[in-house]
Image 1 (cartoon, rainbow, N blue to C red):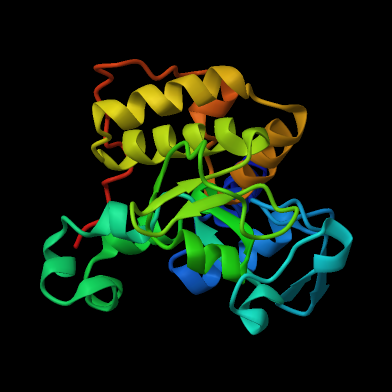
Image 2: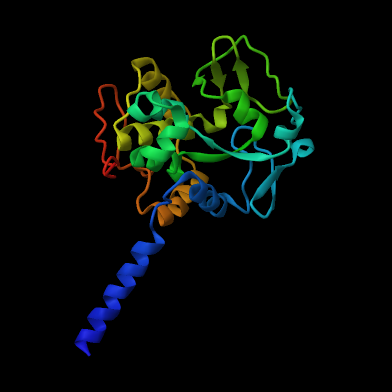
Length: 246
């Protein structure tokens, strides 16, 4: 009986570990991200309600006052956006230098882990995702909004993207997490901006709930959301996520 009990306990632990396995690639991550964010999800930058048809998300543009800037088909679909762009966490890797993102996906397991990290994925209107591109986040006080009631600003010449105030803290804590987990560098200017955003837009109840749901799949939380860690100038990233053999 004791042996059976131990065997049953081991099985439960194994099943729990399996349930918490992080996605192995970006395609798996997108499917899991939909489960985590749906059904009450709204688009990250523009707060537009999302209607899901299978794996496809359709934003309610009229309901949120969004105006298409240029690309209508892309504006009418939801895409999974990397808050910290793939270019940021990939361009200094050897695989990227030898063939860009496609080569990294094919040859670099650590890049695939970063690309599939659920804490860095958010549902965004496709056109906004495209306009943001891999631009750095920043403040654009003199730049007009270009997407109707969606409160984002883009300076295509300076390659800067300004998000709305309500998600700036979320963005900051995502950058802190990615930099810490994968030993990525943030410039002093970036750190100062994100530290300010972290204070101006503190962790909300909704962010805590999303963190808890994501943890069920990733097996760990974002410690900059839970409060276990606090970023400061001079913070030394631990790189605890760089454990996948290449």
